[in-house]
Length: 134
Image 1 (cartoon, rainbow, N blue to C red):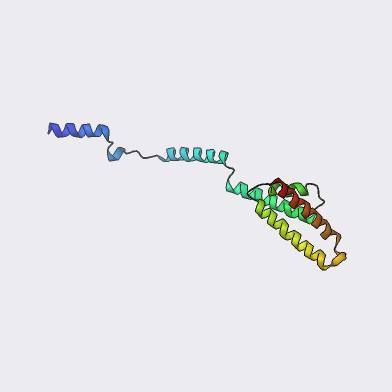
Image 2: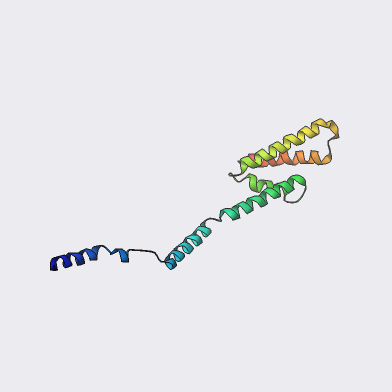
């Protein structure tokens, strides 16, 4: 009987009983997740912030296409167009807009509106600007 008690005590030193197994408490989990979240937010701006920024940049390009003579119009196109993640999207958008405006100008021959001709010039400069930087 003495031997079995000794062996039980000896095993207890090396392995915690089920009742004392390592179980994280709610407070420990809260602290760990808070630290992980803080580290993640500091390292990455987060998908919500990034999506909002992208949306603002797309709206800035849309406004630039609506009024190419506005201050900062070319810079709005360059800001997003020079980002390698969005270059193809911006280049495709500008290319399709240019193609459509050229079709409008070609269909109306020499009577193309001043706005369409101005946008064609702006689109050609914008495409050149982002293509030369890539």
